[in-house]
Length: 476
Image (tube, rainbow, N blue to C red; front, side):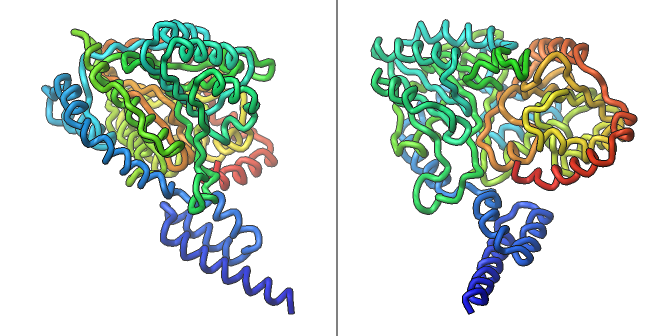
């Protein structure tokens, strides 16, 4: 009797969960997969669905609306600081339409007069970050997905404590799951020294207790509203090539100064409000004050599971469809959905030089093996796949033709497109495109281009493993 009751309850929960999956899952393939498993194996599938199956971040949307209401009094100041530096679309209609599409996706315009400095590798990036922290006068915003209490983590702790001792407000966000190994004493030392440090938890509140599959993957640092940093680097020694397991670490970070910095402060403000319920008073006039003649045209695009549309996926799709000459992408995790795969193949058919740079060695086996499930048809279609050899490749960079470059935190996988909070800087102009081109060309020289034979000669057991791994791509 007891077993029959348990079976009945499991089946009922499976049906209820199936209705939820039908109404909320963003893709038809995902909805079908969940419905079949929920009704066939409800004992395993029901808990898995409520942990991994949700693609909408409940609660954060309302939190963001509260921030917007609190910002209403500052909107004229923010708008004025941006409008004075708007990038005027004086090109042909096609290019104008492409630019306006990105602005509508980001809900913020391109601005001119920005200083942009590409920082290759952890040593160069953290050296510049610490230099700017020494000059901090008003506030510092810090956000990392992974924070470790190792050598670079201790250096950052001391730098932030020094800021707090000078009376600088320091607000530090770290992802609760990404930084699960962070010792409590590290956090306590910062708090005792006057640093406001809090975790970003997707499960905050009773309604959101099952949302553990969402991550805040952003890496942002802003000093006084005058200079900011964005890119692939987390706070850990491996990002400076100090890991015996990974060896040299290939990453790219970006320094931004100017009106585009507003796009770094706004998402931090929203994330901080979600984590603490507090509204941070920030300087919105300083970014525009650092505008410079002849500077770069740039925009910062935040994305995440609370967006009304799949912002990161739209950004990538738009970049692919906009390419006329070349499309070069570097991503450590390359598991795109079928729409992106088809768009890449179509770009090749248009005569675009499509190159994808991925690691030769894995850090996540599931993601690594997933790629082998679809690389062969991509290579057959003419997409060039390069595997980076000297160490682990972690940068997230793209280059479109000779005019558009993107540097940020978005990977080409389902997690970045639908489950993670991400952020990307998009810069227009031939100067930045040339810099990124030179960076890519050096990386391609340090890589090996894959051939069809590499996949055709794979042992059958690896082919099976890759197909199984690909089935789990939606929850990676």
